[in-house]
Length: 135
Image (tube, rainbow, N blue to C red; front, side):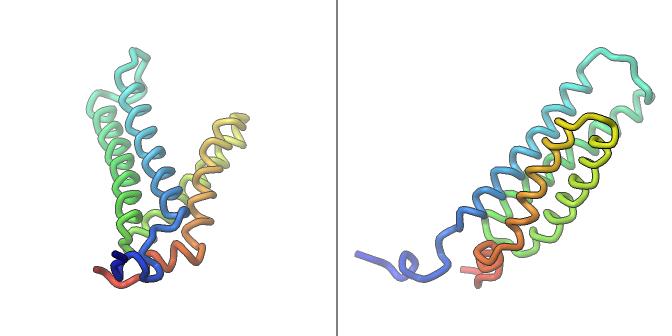
């Protein structure tokens, strides 16, 4: 038996929404894991202990926000689109500093996923997914 929800247009998540979610989750997980690994590494610190702790907390929270935005976009929350765009634009800008510093590979690693999310957030299927009426 076919129900109305299975045949109604726009009820299936577009592939672009899944791609955005995966990229945001991967970015968030990478930020969290690399921050914790860096904090646990025994290296000379430029900041004092309080500054180092504050920086770790800010980075971990940023990673959590990226992951939450991925889940919210997957759920179809239109309010998640703008903060996701802002964070991806910041990552694009950050990637140019790596290019200028000679770390081209790191710049590309920052630039490509952020650019992909930015482009996908403006595609029609994603916009329709985020603008559909709530169930």
